[in-house]
Amino acid sequence: MASTVIAAAASSSMAATAIRATRCYALPYLPPRSSSSSQSFPIKQVSLTASESRRFAPFQTRASSSEESPVDANEIFTDLKEKWDAVENKSTVIIYGGGAVVAVWLSSILIGAVNSVPLLPKILELVGLGYTGWFVYRYLLFKSSRKELATDIESLKKKIAGTE
Image (cartoon, rainbow, N blue to C red; front, side):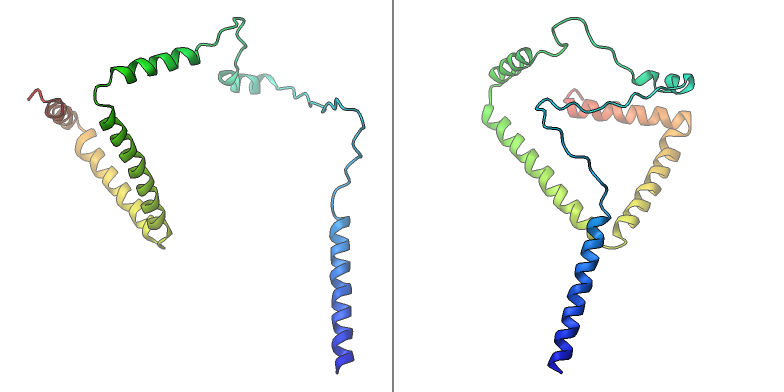
């Protein structure tokens, strides 16, 4: 009995070794590296047809001949420093900023928890699509309802600004 177990274990280990060996031989052959320190990689030149070059035309960029970039980091930092110095109540700004970071973090946790419940994300997606359809029908489809939406938005702006 013991010899049968040993023979079975030996045959299974030999089979596993054979499987591992065939897996190693299944890897693609890589040429040896050259010993030179400045190794250059070949670049494949791709030629585009006329229709393909027109299709990718909006994505082409050109290098600028000037040395300065359109966005200067020092200018951004000086603007930020001036705006921070102009703030009167710095502690309130820090508290609001920290609260915003915590709110984003908590909302991402909540969304992850809701997303892990089966079928709930699909149901919420259907609810969102239904509400979007209703909103388009109610406010955007007809000219009179678009005017009503614009007046509602303007009155809300006035309430927020405190001018009403």
